[in-house]
Structures are given as structure tokens and as C-alpha cells.
Length: 118
Image (cartoon, rainbow, N blue to C red; front, side, top):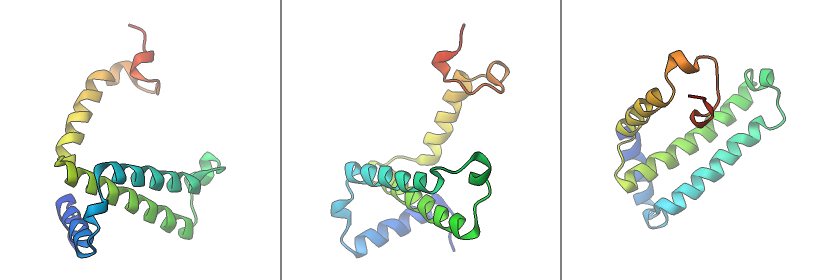
């Protein structure tokens, strides 16, 4: 089984085209579907304690895995439709965050960048 994002994206595109669903998969619709799937992921953790959320039953872990797969699928479809290289975009965003959150300054502190005093 292929394990690269490009291979997975190509498989998702082929899946959509075989069903003539590409016509429905605009960036707007895919973003809305992505948000819905993120909500479904949240439902699995709602009302759990921190400890419970870190030790899911095998059944719950499989359900969470399927929600994460749905999220990744929609994310890859949006990137394909907008011709965005997710790997390059992620590397760029990490570089931005390394500048915004220097490790020596923010270690152990989870505040937003705008909350730090100069």
C-alpha cells in the first residue's frame, strides 16, 4: 500500500472522479466538510478527562482513527483542488512558528505569540 501524501491524494482524486463527485468538491464545500469532520472528532473526546482522552478503548481509538482519516481526506482534497503542496506549506509554517515562538523564550508556556511581553 502506498504511503505518501501524493499517492493518497491521487487515490482520493480517482475515488471522486469514478463517482463523478469532483463537481461537488469545491474548496468551499470541502472546507465545510472538513469542519464537520473535526466536530465529529471532538464528539469522541467531549466530557472525557485528560487521562481518559489519552487512554481510549480499542473501539473508541478505531472510531477516532476513522474521523482522523476523514479529516485527512478532506484536507488532501482541498490541497489538490487549490494546487497547494501541503508538505512545503507545513515546512514554511513551522519556520514561521520557530520565529514567533523561540524555544528559549517560550519553553513550557502555551500562550499565543501576541500574549508575550517584549
